[in-house]
Length: 311
Ligand SMILES: O=C1O[C@H](COP(=O)(O)O)[C@@H](O)[C@H](O)[C@H]1O
Image (tube, rainbow, N blue to C red; front, side, top):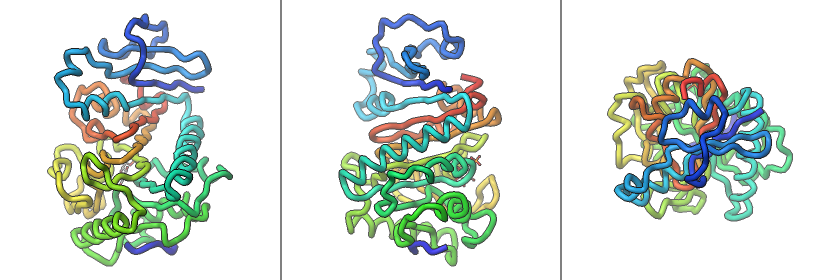
């Protein structure tokens, strides 16, 4: 396990004509009033979401308005279809960035997301040699430990694709949580200096090409848990947590400024156990970390039907 040290329904959130009539789709009708909907002509359906009144938009900063417009929700009949679409989405971005800049910087979470990447390994056209692979969060355990996000990704994904081992950035598992977070941040800063990692012109934080996140039933993303002070971190790129409400307690995690400076973010959520947190995040009926996720270019929520049952 070598590594570097250091269906189908689709919902679109913006850019639909304001004069659209509400569709006859029961799913669409269950959305709150501030959503407008449009149904696609193929086997895909798109619904607009979070379209703000003109007055509301004017009162917001340009950055915020842009982030809302960049948000899409895609709903799939089955997790199988979701996994297939996620593979297409990722391989499309891989092609784009490998051609444009000769590198593709990809960040993954642990948890159920990793299983949903299984169809990506079957895509022949991907230039894996240009991939640089990171973790948005990691548990501070040895790499061979059952709780390790590295092990999870290695067993189900990395062991099946030829990403150069030097382009796989696992945490240093011999350090404390605090030291491991500092070490990972130093590693990212080095990659910025060498040009592997871009920097966001608007925030100054690293700009990953694609971040793929899962979400816990409590609405946590990465190791950013509801009500935890780490959600408010504004300076650090990578931080540590020693009181994670979900075991293991010691972890490191990217902070929100880093996640939200990414070009593309995919939030992948399946199962009815997460429906309430999805509702809280997307309809703003509650305050959950997943509701704070954004991206500089595009945020896409990939949901299966049970996960969106409360929308
Ligand atoms: O502890 C973690 O949980 C979340 C969510 O996991 P899931 O199995 O409910 O999808 C995961 O995204 C994160 O990376 C992991 O450390």
